[in-house]
Image (cartoon, rainbow, N blue to C red):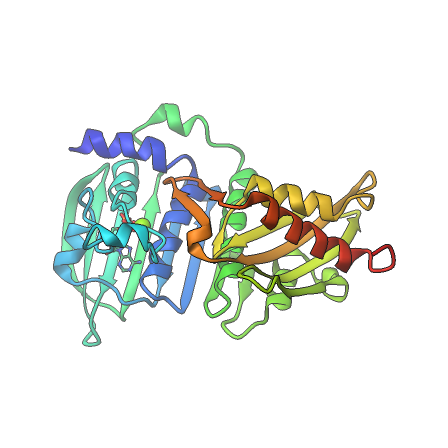
Length: 324
Ligand code: ADP
Ligand code: MG
């Protein structure tokens, strides 16, 4: 049993940022309004995600550490109408199998919570505990029992960079949720529940961007809508630009969309200039096939050309109104 969890871990848990991704997705699925992510030493020492979501009962807390104990798919139809981020019931057991994991959760308003400690997939201890409603998961010594995997961890700065990227994507996609990310006790960023999309973009990508953001808000009259913000090509940025695209609410780095964005910036991307793009594309779910692989999301549009040209044209129009 634990071997299969460790095999799943090989697929689901590639590095600290994959743990953060799974835990934050669970918090969002639990309806959290506030999510705090605390990291120590790039995630190799500690990854902790705390939320104020619906929490779990004592029984569910034990159950969720078992493989395929998802609470999110109750009937086969749920699979095609996937509304939650998780559905495989694989992440928690996988993470627990390659770390020292502590789960604290409370699913009632009476403060009757539970704490369970797991080491390398084996439950070591559990006790009742007074807790506010919500869930906290504390992951220590990731890959302590899989040295080969531990060797692939990069420098702390690299790992925290990946983690920041994961949190940024979710924070952009969920403007009604408050997010905070701390590394070694220092706050890397915080966005409040009521902060606007431009404020969120500025929080992640830098204050100076704020006055350069160009709004995009357009419908094609059929079923496509595109909204968000883009920036004229940026010079001298510390990062190499940033392209965040969301398809029906999920952050997806799709080839067709990516190409359309670059096309929209054509002739503007001189050497050393980078696009900054945060765009939300929505379309009829029947027009897009979302293949939800545990680690990466891929989509196939029924009409690629239409989606591509719609995005590219709108970006050109926004960035080069004169030429248009
Ligand atoms: P999945 O998300 O695919 O269902 P996971 O292994 O990520 O599988 O989680 C297993 C189950 O544990 C979830 O279905 C959910 O019921 C419960 N769970 C996990 N994290 C949380 C959380 N932060 N708040 C409430 N319930 C949670
Ligand atoms: Mg999950």
